[in-house]
Length: 77
Image (cartoon, rainbow, N blue to C red; front, side, top):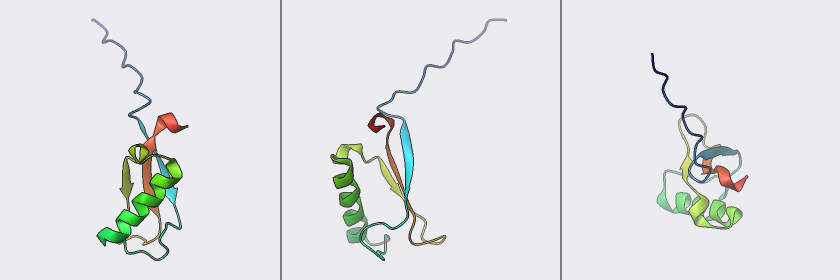
């Protein structure tokens, strides 16, 4: 039986890494509001140095209002 080719390693510029922000800016923000989400995205982009490095923001208000997951590219490490 023929073996399949090995899967190539992921592209370092596309593969995301996830970080948790426990006390995001602005404090006590309601991330269901567009203005608070935009403020948080701008704050994270400022920390990263360039907005193109911010892939995604994830939050789940039903679990807890504070922790936010941030996806950034692996190349920043």
